[in-house]
Amino acid sequence: MPHHSHITDYSRYFSQRQKVYLVNMSAERNSEIYESLSGIVTSSSLDTLELMITNGGHTTLDQEAGSVTYKVTSEALGGGIQVLADLSGIIAENIFQFRMHGTLEMFQRRIVSRVELSARIFQRCGNFPLAFFKKEWKRVMDHLSNNGVLAGLVMQHTEINLSAGGIGLTVDATKKPTPFSMFFVEIDKDLPVCALAETAWEKGVDERLRCGFRFIHILKADQERINRFTGDSLKQNGGTHLDFKRNWVLVDRMMSDNRKT
Image (cartoon, rainbow, N blue to C red; front, side, top):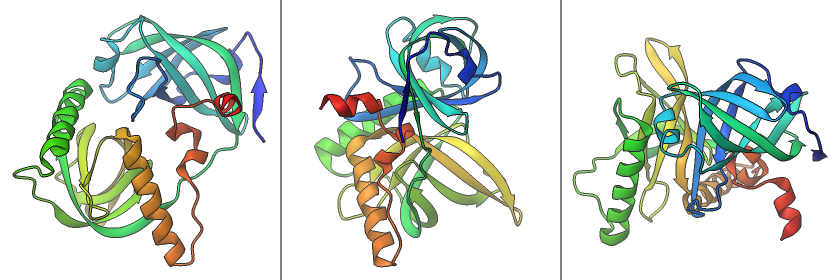
């Protein structure tokens, strides 16, 4: 059952080295896009949280200090937690300060339905900052919207693991992925899904590398497309489908927002 905690000291829910996810909740955000970052807690006190933004995503925050609100989600006391936080300052190159406010919500952590399949994909890697990838993603999406095709895009059939939250695949050990990638994934007869992803984990498997990537910049409509695709695939094989919107990390809403609509 969801639980809402009215508190003035949030620090008991955050400890050093704790992993958190940030979801853009700013009023000025593009409401058609899901945007997220990852961070590590370096300090917390009362209503203040200091985070080290991982994978070079801090270059995006450098441009946003003092102007954005995020939902901070993590795990505490055996469940999930989320609270709103305003970006209030820059402590160091990749350390940022957030001021938490409002109700801290606690919820049951939910897995996301995922399927194994062979799909045509293309992965673009590169040691570029997230700001570069976001600019390139917008250019690609504008082009796809206007032209319907992307010249020179060579997609290959690849064994993948897919969910609304991310993608997993195996690569040559010599082709270790960069912190950020742009994925094109063909799941239906429409245009391919195009999403930015961060490398979430890596594991050696028989002299190859199994990698998991978390989608951090994707159209909500494409989240829905993947959700429908995985749902249909699971139902055809007698499986059970869990809607990705039950996982609060993957939506830019608070539980209290549901009661307002």
